[in-house]
Length: 212
Image 1 (cartoon, rainbow, N blue to C red):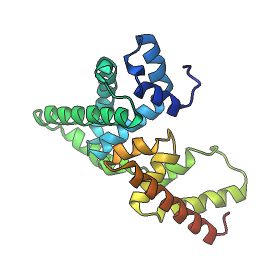
Image 2: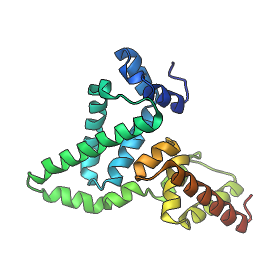
Image 3: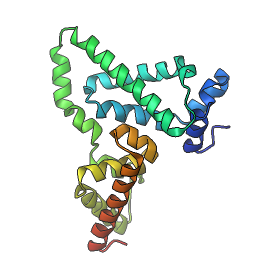
Image 4: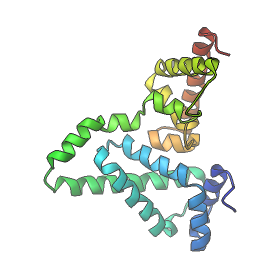
């Protein structure tokens, strides 16, 4: 396996026994799938309601735990791998939150959390950020600008559950349907259903705006 393999293929290698291999080989697999792993961890933490000021520290701790306890993973499928990682995320989030509760709350932390918009903004990224991560920063084509504007409006009009699935599956470090299911605490079949519905709603909305 090399670093150019598709992230999904690398995840399958990790899930089917790759985590128990030679440290150098395991590290190569983790490095190759890092964007997807990191995104899963952050989204799962947000789903659990973690405070934004704790997000980065908890994410780093989780990835350290994954490396340290990699040989405790006994699964053989992608679903088992994501479920194993989900449990690590939940356990470390709870542990860190309990630790934080025992310490005095600093006013700076409260102010920072308030100005950042709280966890909901972390989980439901702004449509501007979602769309612009996939286009060049300078767009001269007027037609392209109009298409992007229409896409933003149509995304804004989606039901929250459809928007969340579309964002998880199609933007930035795309998650698989199985991974998204673990993030959202639902079945992969339900994620697929929401994806199909969301895409159809987007298609109809774009067509109504004259966008093919």
